[in-house]
Structure formats: structure tokens, C-alpha cells
Image (tube, rainbow over all chains, first blue to last red; front, top):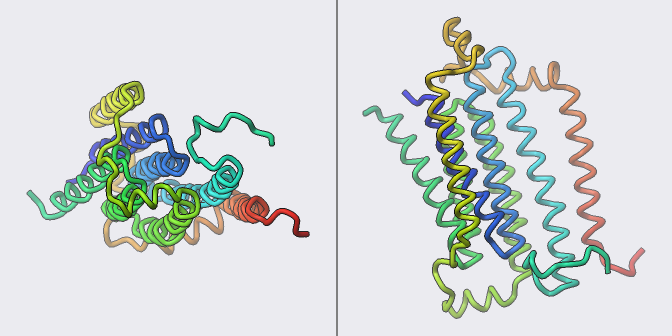
Length: 101
Length: 182
């Protein structure tokens, strides 16, 4: 029997890996991948808790919403990354110091 | 041990192992393909949580859309990384930043502690659902219920999120437009 704890531990591992990527990587696209890992861990938790909510299906519905939000976020963030690369010729977040031209 | 539990452990080992390799590998193209593996195995875990529709959506949206976008951004943004990939001289593991490692490991410790203790002190609504035997079963038709709930109970979030998705798409198209055109 797979219990709730199994899912929560796997989600915790994925979240910590994403947190490490966000803090340590020097590449904007990989920082974005780290954020996606954290979102996936959160969706895993929503889905695991949703097994006990037969009346409302709240967890699964909000998991779908979270997937859509993540996709919209990636589209905008990658557009910004490409613009930043065109301007600065680098995508290392530590080299980018100004917001305006 | 049951077949189901073995398969669950296999999927979670693939997901956790490749996500740890993903955040520590030096080569960006390999990291993106490892992200592909992580997304597929997490979709497998959703099936074990009896959410097959969410699993299919994960494969369609993430693997079909997000990952292709990321590969495009990678190829358009880092020419020197592509050269590095062709020469094959990149270091295999990037040097770990110990401060970030410390924060991530301590956060993992807090989360695992909480996850283990939820087995002994689980929330009241989960206990009530277990006693009333009202949990989702593998044979249930979840897609029909999700569709009905989306159109009735969760209609307002559904509409809000569709407007937000359109705003994000227009914003992305506006950000990537060519300068000087009308």
C-alpha cells in the first residue's frame, strides 16, 4: 500500500533539488528549470492529497490550474530571457544589474 | 512486496535521482534532457496517486510544450555552450555552492520530518474520508467528475485562469517582437 507519506517524501526531495538549482545555478534557463521542479513537487502533493477528496476533486482541479500557470510563466520568462540575452549577451543572473536600458 | 509498490519505488527513484543529477550536472543540454526524464517519471507518480488525467496533461503540456520552449531558448541563447557540447570538454559535475546546498538540505530535513509525522497525526478530513470509505478508487471514472467540477464548482477560477493565460501569451508575443516594426 502506497501511503501519503511516500508521496510527500518524494515531493520534498524534488522541491529541495529545485531550491538548490534556483540558489546555485548561474544560468537563467536552469534557474527556471529549478522553479519548474518546485512546481512539480507542489502538484505531486496536491494530487496525493486529492485521493481523499472524492466529493470535490479539489486537488486534481487545482493541479490542472497549476500546470497551466506554470506553462504561462515559462512562456513569459523565456521571452524575457531571450531579450536579456540579446541585450547583455549573457544569461548569468549575477551579471545582469540594471532593469532599464 | 507488491508489484505496485515496486513500480512506485522505481518511478520515484528515477525522478529523484535524475533531478539531483539535473541540478548538479555541468552541461546545460544534458540537464534539459534529464528534466525530460524527471517530468515523465513524475507523470508516472501521478498515475499512482490515481490522477490519470493530470498525468496526461503533464505529458501534453510540460513535455510537449514547456520542454520544447526551453530547448529553443537554450539553442538561441547560449552559443558557447553549444560549442562546449560539440567539443565535449565540459566538466561533468559543476562545483557545488555549499551555501545553497546547506539551505536545500536543511529544507529537505524539515519537509521529510513533517511528512513522516503526518502519518501519526493526519488531518481530520483525511481520517473522516477514510472512515466513510470515500477515497478515490482505481476503478473510478475521474475524468467525468473533473469535467463536471470544472464547469460547476470551480467555474470562477477556470475563467480567471483562461484570461490570465491569454494575457501571458499576448505578453510573451509582445516581448519577443522585432524592434522597429509596427
